[in-house]
Length: 354
Image (cartoon, rainbow, N blue to C red):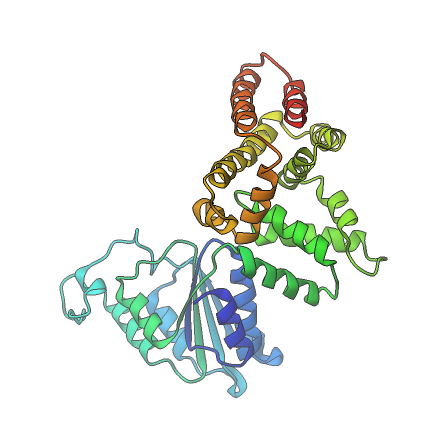
């Protein structure tokens, strides 16, 4: 189950007795954790009926926490962060993975783990447990299968495409802010072109934008571009937009802002090379008669980003893009050997605009 489906169920009051939430997107994990907490615990008894562990405690201690009678007739919530019980790197026995082995009474079985699995399969009606793991779980484990059968497995994966758009809409609503369609499209395009980006990062930048534009009726494209131009990854995206429109002064200005802010030329070079490499791949596929959806599927990017690359690629020839990549590779070597300075990036940008 993805975070969106899980969140909708929780908000509708359909809270599973036990969850395994795993994945690298910590923002979504915190969101799900808070939604469960708000749904099952009363504010007046939250401090007394909430038990949290960082790492796996003694398993019998965990079982006792689950079986504990809640204070004032409410619910218990037990949260186990950074659990390794589901991790593939953890040493396993046959009793832990083979459903035909009962576990208790066997030489290699862990009785405390078997008892925890039994508890998960028959959770007290007033108790809820949430296991949180950063690593990918081992689906062969009996404890995984037990949570899957009697509770819910939720993956907190990085958001892309329509899921990211849904998150942005929800977050703007929570912040009581509005953003023009053009600004939303620009932000989603820029983020989707970045190799790695966390929701924490996007949320922080969004907060800055809203604070900066609080006296405006809505966040518009001009304000958004001005504020986000300080972010190297987004600045390079904007730089490529300028290059595709032959706006050389705008592209050089964006480069200058990054260099003046102290960004290392090698980092900017790497970001620019990645964008141009994607443009080259898109250009080659366009020449083969492939569609923007084909480009998106091949490059594993959202469809609207594939469409953006397709449009931008029409501004450059394959020879121009290949030559620029060679120049960037040479510039990378020269910068690392201190044989040249950041002016080499300006030269490459100027040639791309010609």
